[in-house]
Length: 185
Image 1: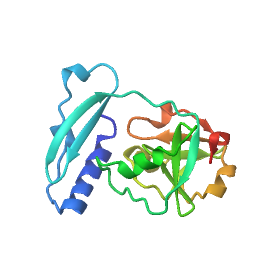
Image 2: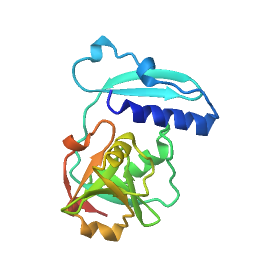
Image 3: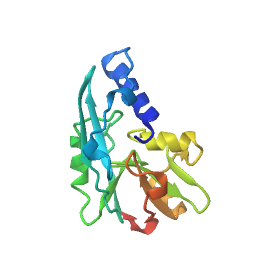
Image 4: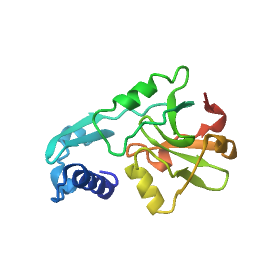
């Protein structure tokens, strides 16, 4: 289980904020990996409210993303990781010929429909300081000084050479570069 401490923090912070639940869970103690999931790459989904409702495992098949479409939505909110992804899925239907979307809110770059995003300017990697969801991989990379935050507006994209998508299932090292020229409307 990768970056489990960050998943614990998100779960417990969400439970405190959404459900006023003071009890903290430790996912290392709760999650039992089935023997059928010991080979290959699996996504573990923990569904919870005040209590853990379910723990599910499914094979993870990475998306192949080579192009990104900028989609503006000034009202979207996704501060917590919800099972209801309706607003994100609705925006994703607008991707047209592109593989994935970048959500723009009030002129600022946020996230894609399923990941945080990082940009490289030829020297350093940065991530938008305006994400919809502060992902666990994003937090890990910031805490370990591998990326830094900065405000990124659509007009700033010209200052970067490439982008990468990151999330719990896409570590920094295995992320695929996306040319800035492959980001459009």
